[in-house]
Length: 215
Image 1 (tube, rainbow, N blue to C red):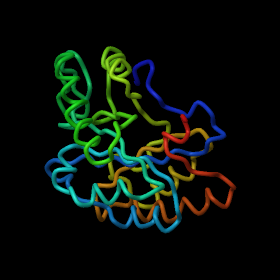
Image 2: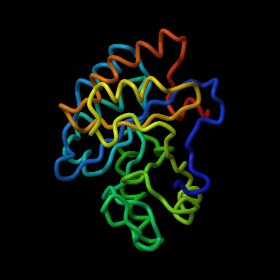
Image 3: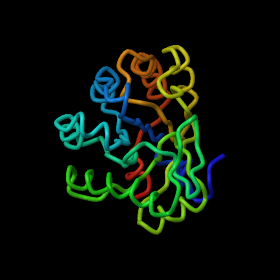
């Protein structure tokens, strides 16, 4: 269950579909699904990329390159990839932050890193596992960033096969926020996107970054 004040659907569905990819970093998570990124570049699909500090540190040149892609937007996926909590609540077996000060560090350390890369503060934050409690959400708002969830889980942490990724992605309608992952090469995400995105485009649906949708 998402906390209140979390962006789960776009406030104006006419803005289109927001495709987001998480780059989580850490053990087993520092890779890059270049095939998925190449599909988005080839089709000209706007996307919001949530980068974790651990992934950035292992992919510094690529992070700079992604920041330079005009239809990509970089967003904050935390420093340690921790669920955002003020009492240590865990999600998917990952321990969350344990205090307001830890929430601040989880957000702002990577905020500084992304600001250095892009020249501006990231506007959106999605915590590790996409979990945050209501107090953490209020802290994010006070820090001037938008706590971000999703309405469609396209790849379940890059564990779905391509056929399921395609089916879940194809469910999207204007106003939906799709969560997927860009740090697991060899997953079904890229092939699923290649199958589903043209179908959505043929239906006349547009894609948008979160920032463009909320501008």
